[in-house]
Image 1 (tube, chains in turn blue, cyan, purple, red):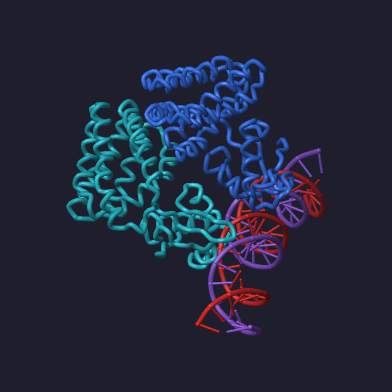
Image 2: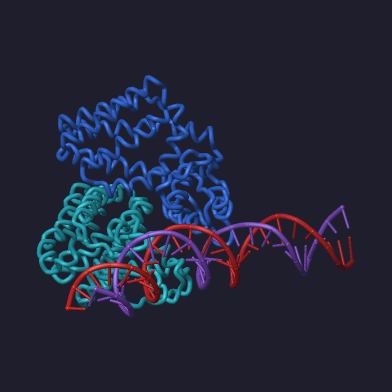
Length: 225
Length: 225
DNA sequence: CCTAAATAACTTGTATACAAGTTTCTGTGA
DNA sequence: TCACAGAAACTTGTATACAAGTTATTTAGG
């Protein structure tokens, strides 16, 4: 588990949740690892209570499994969940981007323009971690433009399963293509071309699908079944 | 707040979560009501810890608002959330019922048949509460047939907002039509007729849309804005 | 050396005590 | 009667103590 600095504003609970979540997504907490409330509390410098509440929340998202009186474990990557996450993205992202075509204001477009411009900039400087964050923000901006912020928060939770696969695929999937997809999506939103948006989202998702087999072959110990 | 019996098997945390949630959906805890961790803990006969964890979870679903050191309140019915919940249903329920057309086994069909038969039975005996539960189970069975159980759990949380409106509309919406919709959906799944399924889900949802205006007029104190 | 029982060291679940901050009440003064 | 200060009674956030159960270790007996 890697250290993550506590922000001065956030509560101990929010800090614990953020720290544990980031460690799970980054795979610094490997799938199958046993975790202890006491151990994490000591590591983060807070008491068991906020750590426990964070773990409860992550167990509801099914990325942590709690066995009462026995221990808790980082869940193995379950293909069932990954498939459901992909299904949700395919369904909801398309519906939301179509809604964004109708509702996006100039301010929304401006924010998206700035985001994609930064992605294109960091693509040249090879800053993969920056692109990762901008990728998340890009999709959040689209949900925001469609006035579906609550659904994005919900999407984030189930997307945790997908995110771990994404972390593993960082090396194989080409950032160039991802940023290119985002640029095309933005242009299609500006043209209010829903059919094009739909196609782009499907193509975008298919990029991750391709290499799941090889990822699984490379890291079999991380997968369930 | 109405009393709800604690099941012998469930933990104090699960009991508190179930009890508070049911009271919110049934409107026995009215929108805008102030709630206290201590008060609820005393009422339920457990300590603050499990009650607190339950409230945290419900605050994440945005049906409870927590103001640190000031108090917590049952959230007013926010039209934004209700609209997002409706959007999710329209989008996801359609995609899932289409998937169910492809994947439903005979066992799935049998369970749906039994459920709808019970709905038709209780329709004659005027047992609205039974139909309410069977309604929930009907949609859950469809998600199960489509192998999307995780998404259903997620759907349940955001649907809390919709459920409160549904509770208010119980008197105005005709159960006859709802059960009729369910019967037609089942027949369309059996025929694997996706286009018909899509139309039925949209018609089904529109039934709740009609009377939101009058509900809001009848209970203005429950609504935000 | 091996087996088995006792025990110690863990786990999470729950209750309680304390901390920090807000609101409300109460009493005192003019 | 009104204004204001201060205390008391709340709120949630956090830390800690204890309960109940599981697992690992240790120790005694053969």
